Length: 325
Image (cartoon, rainbow, N blue to C red):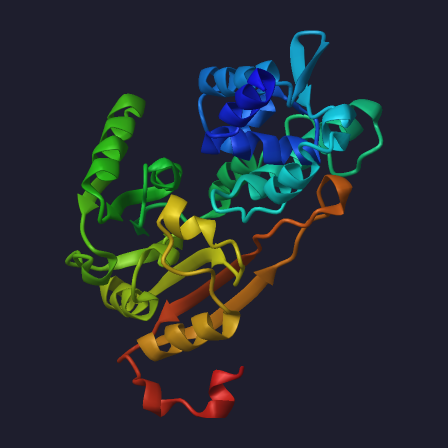
């Protein structure tokens, strides 16, 4: 009876149940479990220790790494089969399974790279590095607004080609953190302001480029934010939107503060046209491969851009045929 009581006590913690759920799917290194759960490695080790002491998981050493799994004997134990099945089928409210797919994808690419079998794996490959390299092709001296700048990481990359860049976010704490980061890196042409994206201040000459990088999903009214972007741009200024296509990962609402589960391309096109933008381009970014076990990434990207034209057109001006383009 004491053993059973200890086992049930180990399952009384939500974090341990989350750990058990992902370990029922795959054996993971302890560091990978921490990444999947999004918690500190020290906390992860403590929680895994409780599960190990209760007999639910076993550890296997592989060089410097410790791998954790649910033994076959535990899976077959009639005392726990029903409970483990229920744990495995619980909703992914914290987004653990999405992060698990990322971890397994990275592991697969690293393994293929070591074996020389992957065309996708290139030592030193970095999307951040490619993004930085492409800034060499952008006209210098632009006035840029990074709308929904967050911690300022993208803002400081934009500063490499911009004459000036203003990062704008409604959250005072992240704006303060962005200012600190800019000061630490000695970036003099990047400044930061606290403002709602629908009320972004307009400089005297207007911006040449307004960027929404995964920030439209953070506002209640994306159409209004895009209208304001049109108003703060200089003539022929461009708006650039990078965001998510529609998805079903509801956990992003609670854990990441998203207000929308992605945007349909036709919706973005309509909002941009209603705001007064011309030369609108909207494009879906296709997935590149699949993760380990064939698991697909639940998130896909949509890109959109437009040029500031003259007076903003109202929704009634556009026909149904125009909306479908």
